[in-house]
Image (cartoon, rainbow, N blue to C red; front, side, top):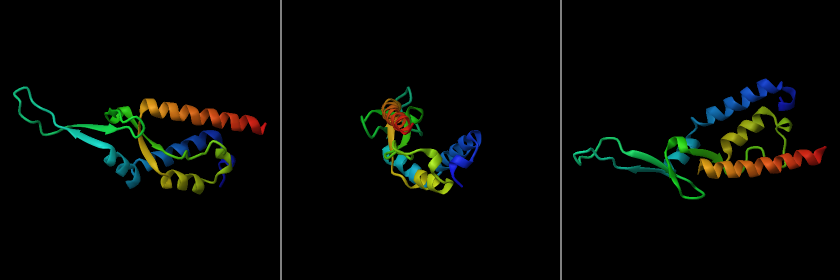
Length: 129
């Protein structure tokens, strides 16, 4: 079934479900593991705490951030800037989400990358009219 045949509200729920399930995929977890850095934590008396601080390194700027400060991003956008979601079937979309290469980016780098992709995507849609 093509996305163009699905009502927009349901389309959003379906894409969210596919992306959320990707977060439990081995490829997603491996990406986080490869970017993970553990830094020892110390007690006030100088003793070592059991649980270290965990940081992740941005693939673009090498900045280190905690879990909430990073994003796992597809290197090649799932929907390229010269494509429209409505042209995809559910299987094609899910295949791209699960089979694309991913990287860890800090929120700033992810915002810059996403804004650039969205600008190109809007220009492409405008050229179709």
